[in-house]
Image 1 (cartoon, rainbow, N blue to C red):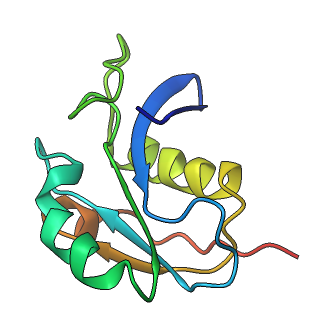
Image 2 (image 1 turned 30 degrees about the vertical axis):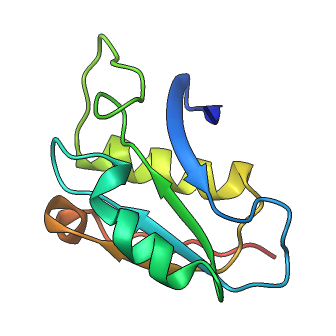
Image 3 (image 1 turned 120 degrees about the vertical axis):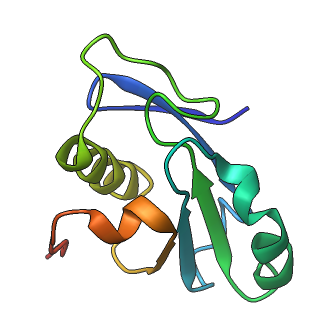
Length: 110
């Protein structure tokens, strides 16, 4: 079970090709109170041509529940920290529901 610690919270994630740096990356972010399994069929379909990463937001799915709770800004910061920790500088980001409410954040690396 892949767990990564970012922003002092353990996030669960699934990576279809963790060692493949050639495939373009697709990141799947679920809606409120869902989990990575929301995108099982999409990952299955795209994983031949893409490195597919699905993750559980803090407090949801298999990720840790924090005493401080969470808000949209915190979830956005966790997402950016996850991408950085996985050394992902460019991706197709697919989300559902609350993901469309995330604050506009530009993420680029030198």
